[in-house]
Amino acid sequence: QKEVEQDPGPLSVPEGAIVSLNCTYSNSAFQYFMWYRQYSRKGPELLMYTYSSGNKEDGRFTAQVDKSSKYISLFIRDSQPSDSATYLCAMSSRRSGTSYGKLTFGQGTILTVHP
Amino acid sequence: DAGITQSPRHKVTETGTPVTLRCHQTENHRYMYWYRQDPGHGLRLIHYSYGVKDTDKGEVSDGYSVSRSKTEDFLLTLESATSSQTSVYFCAISGGGGQGYEQYFGPGTRLTVT
Image (tube, rainbow over all chains, first blue to last red; front, top):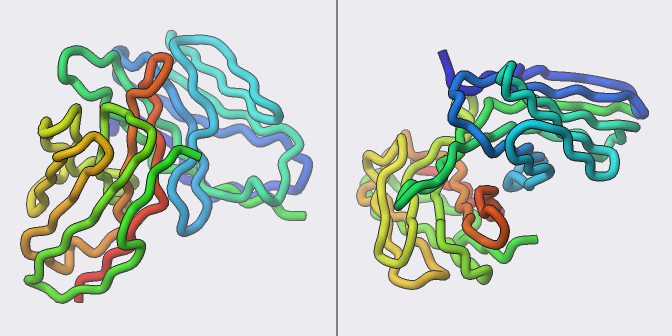
């Protein structure tokens, strides 16, 4: 079993829809949670960064972390065609000494928002 | 955007030749990483650095070596390129302000080994 599971999709929604992207994980040491957006032939771009449990909102994007269920989500409101991309979840445990804060990534979900 | 550049952006090379990829940052971040991204495998860590001259292996380090002689530069070398090393290579940095766990990625290098 992978440490981080993410439904690869693909996910296709109409413009204006609310999109829900999810990841589950098995390592209870994870405390730092990130969502990246990757456009085709580009590098991953950090969208959201959350520490521990709770919600964080940034414009049309909301990240939720439920550590008790080992489940994280990214919600996109009023989705736009420009949101079409691959979305990657990533997480890390606390860094100690020379421990480098390794990120464990999900496989990525391919999202298409059609006009 | 985080100040990360990678060079070259595209490279085609022959099996058995050495190849060096360069990552350059202007953010003065402590940690630097090399990943490869392949269909079906996602992002996999090759090597990372936690300071100048301090490096360690990631999960897919065989056939790769790295060096970091300055804070801003992290080099990835394929000693003798093989077709299985055809991939997209990303550099990332972390360790900036705040908690510093988030990583920022460069634009990538698309490497083809023929």
